[in-house]
Image (cartoon, rainbow, N blue to C red; front, top):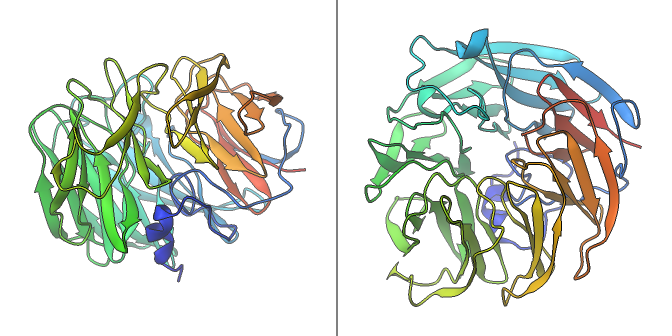
Length: 402
């Protein structure tokens, strides 16, 4: 089985060794890959190892372990929520499993969202899939559905955040209009191990991040109006910060240099750098710095070395000093952005919704290396494994390599 310590290693600023990409934002959960020799340039015809059509629609990212790639999708206009398994080397479909049949779609979804937006987690002989309030399931790598769990709440825009795996717990946030809580399911059975209510507020769509602070794990889970840290084993709150009217936030937090970087959401997003060693309300005592301009509502930030990079939803990229919060540069990349940037092979990749990927060299000066386009919408984040870049478009999945 995969070593589940990979998920606790989200505490590390440096990326892990290894070629798998088993969850949203890769092995560390923070957008880093150790792969070398990756394609810097591509198109619909250049450096394409394969391109395959994907049935239905979903904005989840691929999860890759070994030579198998896992992807969720929704067919029949969202009535059938499915898990696909493909050969990562050839793109050939190996399994197509209906996990949930939806009869009541509830309040519907945002125009940019899908019924299959959360990314699966692959751990050994298990694949954990999450479709928000439509349900969560554990599936064997042979395609057998082992358990299902459905928790009711009412988000306005459909499923968003992906789960996190810690030890034997599958943890995710459920922030709707009617209820806001974080829950941990037993990864073996799907039963609820703990459930912690948040202060009443509004919807949010974030993915929790497990970090290590002083040898102890913390689960960082931003929500509407507040961001929280919990003990991942019990759900007990450790600390929180308040950011007023911030809500409907999507970006996953990142952790480096002893700071947790959190985006606050609508209507005026702010990036907060928080020291995670406090207790209770640490808004006034543990916010090291904050930054209020061109902060993303959807894409997660990324830290590479001493720099933090982020791109706003309307395509303005910013490079900050990760320790001090000062601005190194700001550049308009163009397009609209939902996908989270990744760092691999000494480059940062920013993928727009219009199918254009801007590749830059990390550093205190902006240096563009390439612009690559495909003729499809692209809201899913890139995945990287086996010297290849996997890009999910609205209709197709691509494998790019040199």
